[in-house]
Figure (cartoon, rainbow, N blue to C red):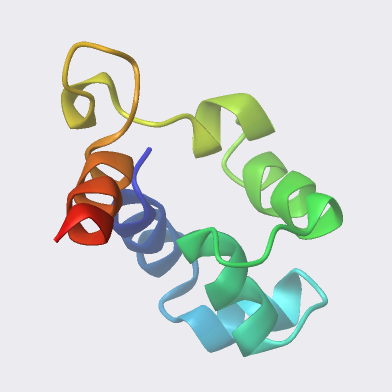
Length: 85
């Protein structure tokens, strides 16, 4: 799922990131960083995935639609293009 899809899942289940963080025993910023994949906390990922009955792999798998043929996500390609500029 993409970060946005995970965020919508959190809003659907808990109503807010803050409420989800409270129930998952972490801070709001820790949960936000985990969802956006900026900082990876395996413990938070596991608790977040377990809440809707998913595995970490299912919840944090990159969407196939976001890839462009060679297996790298579009974000990687954008970053590479920006480095070349």
